[in-house]
Image (cartoon, rainbow, N blue to C red; front, top):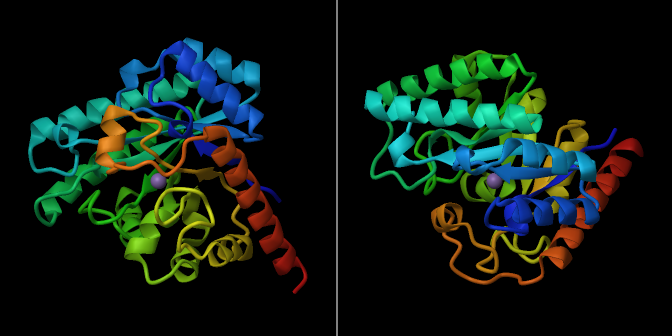
Length: 292
Ligand code: MN
């Protein structure tokens, strides 16, 4: 009973040229992680064979995440935007398959941006239809689709566990899972334990991040509650660390996530600290469950 621990590549580098991929992958392995989460906002920027080979050399698994944009928004009533978003997701799936990723997800159900108004039923239906198609195609390669519900400033469609479960009911495909990020939950949910237990065995991916997205333990997230809930529900899926600082910048992602200030400089210190924080947090929580 243990989880695979991962780290988002933006802890190390803001691009994916071969030398940047090597840096991120080698540092992820050196910091003791099992997997690296590779952002694929522009799937065509990833050299599939190069990345796959480097992952093999360093013995790392990979997952892939992205956020759609208003130009590729499947949560829209505009058929051209929906088609553009579908193309982006299918390209990302090809790249995920090529590098050997186990999971593909993120804010793939809508644009990752601040919407000017609430969503519509017709836009949501378009999103559901594309994700259903993506899930069916992904299932052929054994890839799990993760739906990362996010805070209200980054999507108008899925902001809570309950909304994500309702959406998943409509998608109705077995390889689609809830992707919970405690940074977003901290803004939108009433706590951590109740919504995580609500997701139950439909929870399949977890992002661990602080309330200010910096060092774990230096913000206001109640990690004892988070790890306690995950241990109680015997969550066995990946747990991935996310942190963002102006020290490492990706033009698309950093601006979308409003990364305006410097929360850390030393990626290796941050990454090794987070690995230990998550592993010991889960170990202690599981020991508490076991001793009951
Ligand atoms: Mn996240």
